[in-house]
Amino acid sequence: MNHEPDAMNSSDRTIQSDRSIRMEIDGEEIEFYPLEQVRLSGVDYLLVSDTADGDGEALILRDLSEPDSSEALYEIVEDDAVLEAVGKIFAEELDEEGIELQ
Image (tube, rainbow, N blue to C red):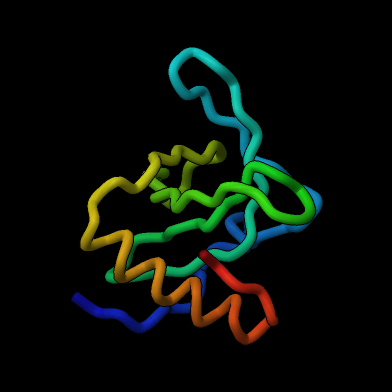
């Protein structure tokens, strides 16, 4: 597995701090706020928080969208090996910005 983040190749997938992602989980619509994104082994991942500012719960989402799709399709990453690999990259990225993941 390649652990080096690749550059994002689609400008419409760029993280914008004023945007949020809405997902339906267990019948409830929840809003998430993107913090970082990375490409690992050709797959795009987003680190999102349930709060726009301050401390909140974080999740890693896998982008399942087709490259030419106008709508994004995400799933919550639950695989421990993927969470560990992608989480390590996100932790390093955020550490450089002075943000600590717990």
